[in-house]
Length: 380
Length: 166
Image (tube, rainbow over all chains, first blue to last red; front, side):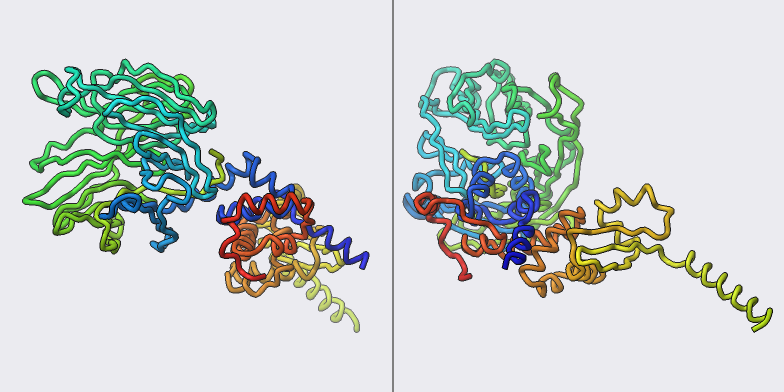
């Protein structure tokens, strides 16, 4: 018996091997395993090294999170579903068990979701069911919200950019006369809002929702001149230094096709942009450009206009009919396809095999918004 | 025997020596239960912990390496997995105890592919299991007071839904 006991004692796995196993286990199970022992509780609740290791592992296989808009009245007007690496439906729910019943997902970053309920914001970790209400501040009728993470600062931040009508006309929305007014930042670490300098953005109007790579949040901004012509720029926000920078987009092709617009996306933690255009009567095509050598979170003294450059990755199409690119998930393009009757469907398109996969919509869904999602232990 | 016999013996001896130098280099691993297992040098290449010691003595033909933490049973299981190119089916046939011990050895000898394979297999095995199963599997002693444990379970009640039977 004594021999047996000594033998068993020797067979305890070292902590690094335990971490190697646990990083592969779903977060819900890890929440349960906090009850295994004090050592495990400490590992799963307060070990930044393990939290990072788990996130790194889950980031390799991100799920596609679809926010679905239903034709039902609140609180059932939104729901979410998660699609796994093999196009399997992992999970679907209303977020109501953890968040406000009608909270809408604005952004997803490293497994944390930034939600909006009326004008209130919150940060949710759906895997651990932890939620943080962000303190309320007065907001302008027009504003854009960004959500990002800085590795160097080890902090998550929400940035809110308010816009106002330069003629102070709040009743008529005329994008020609709406300009950036002010910007404020909320940090998960500090737990408070702070106004930041947005003078650089004041001649512009933000025309897209944001996307984020590690260390930087991006928007599309438009500058309208008195002559009526307008130019599009990319606005970047350095999450750690809380500074805005302006960049130009990729060179536009001078083809006879009709350009439709630009859509920001993220490709392997780099900024990407879809440039879509109509060929012929009504067939969509699009190009994917990626911003290379953009040093966001690593270089301490980057000036405006660093060594970055746009690189064209591929062109796809023309498709039969209209298809809008929305985002990238792994190596696939997530597209929105208008259906007869005004509804839309989500389709995934692999640019290499060129085979589209259309997702079967439920009867009462009419629109979708895609996000990349990974499970994390990051506390909020 | 005479001179012819001696000549013949000398020829055979030379032949044998030639064969030996042509043959694949082998390493002798001595397990915790005192068994010496001869393995090809290519096998040892994946054992990065051993590899770190090997480079200095690379030219030596008769390397003996002690593995005080590895039993002959587990080492032969590892050889099977390696020669089977880490087939998932072979992993499924291992007992829980074997799986855990192989994972421990893979971690100790820094065998990346084997560690990845066994850690994933253990993760799959435990993900839907109870706290009690996990304690038993990892030989962990519960050091919470009953009150502390009740409180913890209450806080994460939702995480206890849908657990498999042990």
